Figure 1 (tube, rainbow, N blue to C red):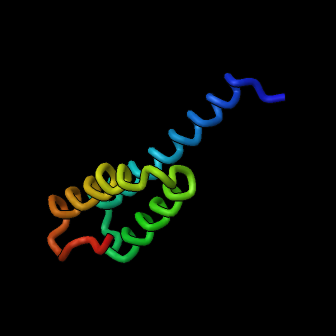
Figure 2 (figure 1 turned 30 degrees about the vertical axis):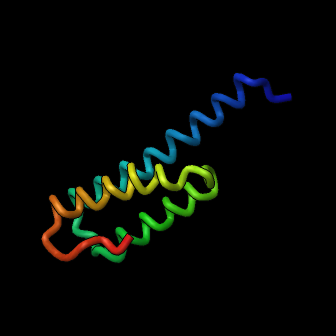
Length: 84
């Protein structure tokens, strides 16, 4: 039987994996030549993951992650805006 400590540890791992995905998207925006559409696909996958895990906190996802991705895109990429 899984203990409360095991549940917390499992959730911490999931949160770290989610954050790692967000960090990878940020890195791709800043230091890769991936086309905008590919970045937008990655962001949409992360959004879907957030909606699955945190359905009542999607406003936080938009305010934290989408704002971060848009800001990085505006700073590091010359072409257009993200459509997310």
